[in-house]
Image (cartoon, rainbow, N blue to C red; front, side, top):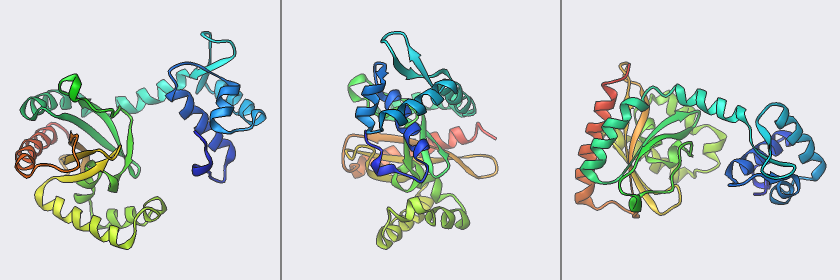
Length: 254
């Protein structure tokens, strides 16, 4: 898990983020040498950063292994604070359960955080049809059906600001941007967006925006299939159920 690809002009922050990401993804506590080996951070730098993270309770010493580290309590406090703000989640579950029983697919609820879409809840069918999509997973708006669904309902100013971001312009060619904008216009007309090759490149998603009383997009409900494309007949039926579910959720928020 080298940090070379995501280097910024703040090495200490880069190191802290890399260490937290590594520890959070590990199923067991990690020692300093293991952390250095997997992140390529020099031992002296890693030691200083970890000591600071421990002081701020972002990382904690774990008694299961000598001088090893795991996620700190502050991480859970921050996550809980963000999670508690998602007032849509209690309303989402019963609607998602009905939708799941109608189409027998995984249902996701995603919300915008900055220029990313974050999965905040999910309802899945039988275990064999579940997907390796976790709560907290993020993806850029223009790379997801949920993000495109929200962008399709945003103002022209919002779209212009979004597509002027360095993190977006660096990943989109002129032709790709033109195609994406065309997709947004189509999504605005249909009431839903479709995206192929999302997350791990092997799944397709369809999403409909959730609107508040001011007609502002605040979230998106998505359905997921293990296929490169949606069967046209299935897509028509899925879209009807999906849009109806999004409207039901929209009617429950302010």
